[in-house]
Image 1 (cartoon, one colour):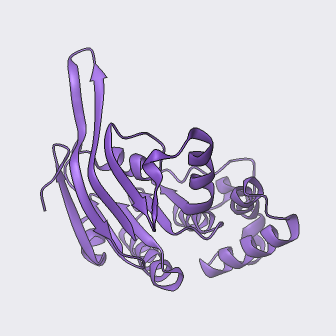
Image 2 (cartoon, rainbow, N blue to C red):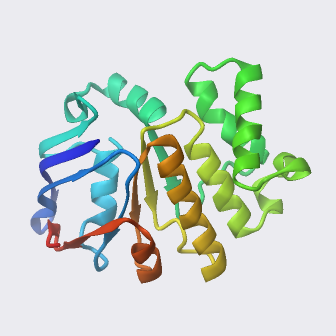
Length: 222
C-alpha cells in the first residue's frame, strides 16, 4: 500500500517560490496500476521523483507499507531506492556499454546479490519480458526501442520492488509496442502484488490503468 498525505514540494527560484506539488493526498493499493495524468508542468514528474525519494518533500508524508519513508536519512533513502523502488524511464536509461543481461544484473549487484543468483534472475526476467536467447547479450544500441523498454522493465523488477514508478514509459514507442509495455506492467502489478504508478500523456495508456489521478498546477483535482 502506498499512502501519500498532504505532500508538498516548493522550489525557490529567482522569481520567488514555486509550489510544484501542492498538498496532495491519495492511496494506491498493492497490485494496483494507476495513471498520473495532466498537462505539462502540472507536477507529475516532480511527484514521481518524491515518491521514489529522488527528491525530498517540503512537507507531508509518504508511507509504503507500514513505513514512513519521507523521514529516512540519505543512506536509508539510497537503500530504499535499491530494494523497494523500480524505475522505468521514457528514455530507457540503459547503460550503453553493458549487455541487456548486465543492465538487469546491475541493481542486484548494488543490493549485494551473489553473481550466480543475479545472472539467473536477470535471465529469467528478460525471458519474462520477451528478451530471449542471444538478445540478452546484445548492447542497447542493437535493440529496438520497444526491446530496450522491455529490458528497462526487467531491470525495474530486478530487486523485486513493491513500488514501480514509470515516467512516460511509452512516449518513444509506437502504439502497438506501447500497449505491450502497459500490458506487461499490468501483469507485473498482479503477479508481484506491486503498486505501479505511470505518468503519461497518452489517453490509451491512462484508460488501460485501473484508475487515474489528474494533476493540475501541482494539485490533485480528480
